[in-house]
Image (tube, rainbow, N blue to C red; front, side):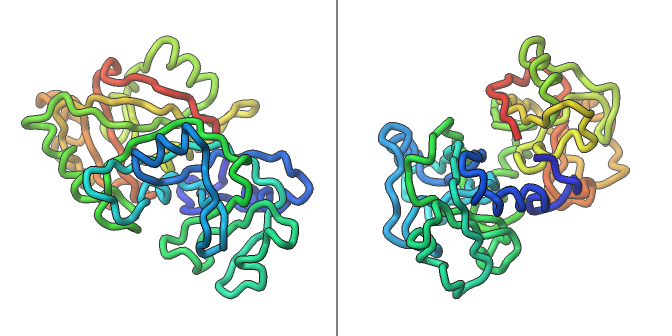
Length: 299
């Protein structure tokens, strides 16, 4: 569902209202995510979810429509484990909104005939301010994909962790073949064309010519901001070999649009640098052949 505010931190009112109205549309499905370890992700994909014994919303399977939220879990990563995010298709059924601590149905919603409980964003129940869902019946959840992500030190940071960012900065000297999972928001028509023929370098932009991508799924899913009539908004999941990277962290940087002329393969705008209204990071890749399309995600 397209949001009117291209840089809203939560989902638009129309989207949230549709979730509340699932009492009448029980077959509605959503793309959601669940953060876990690599080992657990493989087991879940093979055998399915098991309902937790308890939690903020009582027993159930905890998922979220926010990829950024899911990628932070588990907060304490076991030694020698990789953090992974399961991409899911979830049939919510009848939904109960739980929007405050101490709600009379906070842990008993299933006993009152509801299939899922929903904590809306910015209601004070989740420290990050992001939404959360609890699904009673694991059979309502289908695993679509496993996405491996770099572990972040701050469980509720809005940007990517220092460890992750530092590796991108160091690409300009010694890890030229490093690859990242990134995203690009576009229309369905354009996405199918890109998947078939590959990207074409834009003629200009904030960082000059190139292909604009982001490691933030939340950022990518808001584009194009002005969706043409009759089109669907989609996100391309990409594998990007960044090569030699130049950090552009303020407007008017001397290499803001000429970084490629100085031998760099990618320009990187770090999060919260003041260059992007949402505060999320952005990348511009010069050579389209450095980008491989892995999947088309409908949002």
